[in-house]
Length: 318
Image 1 (tube, one colour):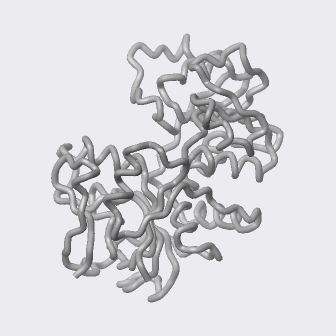
Image 2 (cartoon, helix red, strand yellow):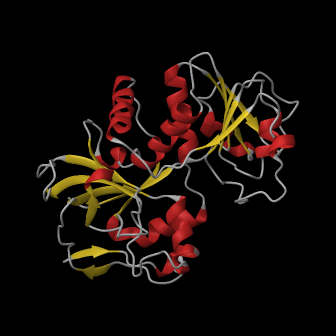
């Protein structure tokens, strides 16, 4: 048996508790992982408070879209017992049971062996957050050291990771937040701006933009770009999920490009490249707070409060 968070309906943070359920049985093409730690994501909050009622969610479901740990049983794959791995996405925590548990059964094609000297709780801050940042910056924005990068909505785990990656690459970074008291959290950017929703005509020279506020400010971000610039919409921090009346011909300036990043498709090559870059540049993720798994209710309450600056990590007891 193992302990896990199990959801079957909309659940408030105060009602989260650990259940005793059987450890998953290994099957062909899947690996059993002993979870050492996992990061918490906005995605799981959406699941718990709303999406759990959707028809495509397998219920009851263990939430959690990422974790780090050790292989317990590699089944028919090339993974070996005791191997350090990360696993993320691919339906995790929605189509099959996720990481809010002592053990997780994960598909081999979304599980990756990693080499890292980081502690488990530090490593747990990397998979989903840094993969999303990496894909947004390099696959979508084609970021180079010569670029001036705008990160709009930078005071979140994804924003902090993006600043770290971009600065390690050597480009100029301008980061925004909507709150003056959060400016110190993005002090490692070259410039910090309090964002009132309108940046057009206030900043110039932006060649690449990572839009984390989302549709709420996307028109304004597009309008301030240099010709030839690229905007990648990755976040929805503004609480607006889509745009009615968006006119691509009028709202995307001539010679400016709009793309987006969806983190559901990690590959071994990308994960290997990312960890190589992290190791070579001695990048350690910024962690907001670490909770023990036994205190998962307090961790979820902290997530809902929005008062933790940085990634919330949950670690298992040794």
